[in-house]
Image (tube, rainbow over all chains, first blue to last red; front, top):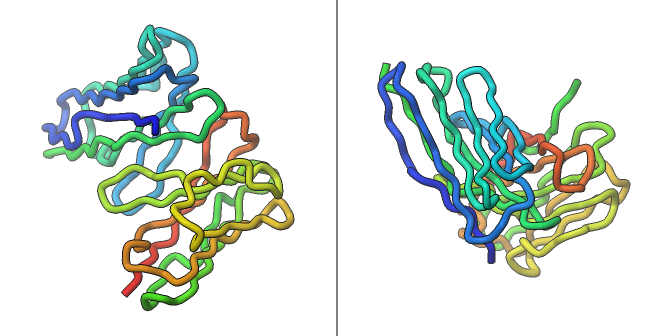
Length: 110
Length: 115
């Protein structure tokens, strides 16, 4: 079936450093959503990207959707301890079910 | 307002038993989704309801798994003859429509442990 891969699987950063996670699909996505899951919590919706080459910002978070709509990235500037968690991308292939990526687990060293 | 509610929060049972997991979505949300999440993995799609009907059940792993949503609101995921491999967190999510461009709102999940 169609899969969405994410790298890296884990990322440990010093507080204040930047963080980036990458999401890749072998086939074109209709749209991509990003979710954050805190330890012990449930996924929480962050944003949706629909258009080719789209860039959206939420404070220190920048989300990009690739020109071919096969990849996406999430960049966090100057990480804080509140950023700890696992970040998932999730894509729609046409009108099919939402397929989640493997996730990137971010830990912050104070 | 209230979010997605799932009960029980934890369920421990023996292999071979039958379990029911309940999901109460956000009021007015027509789309409801069930996912299964194993440790260190992303949520894995099981089934999607639009109203009362199952619009896509392609993620159900086998015929031991069944889900219903008889009145288009609360949904129950049913697992027969449970196996140890069924142990996971079962997440429910709802969205205002099932068109594929709406955020999904997740409940806290039911942690199912099969001994």
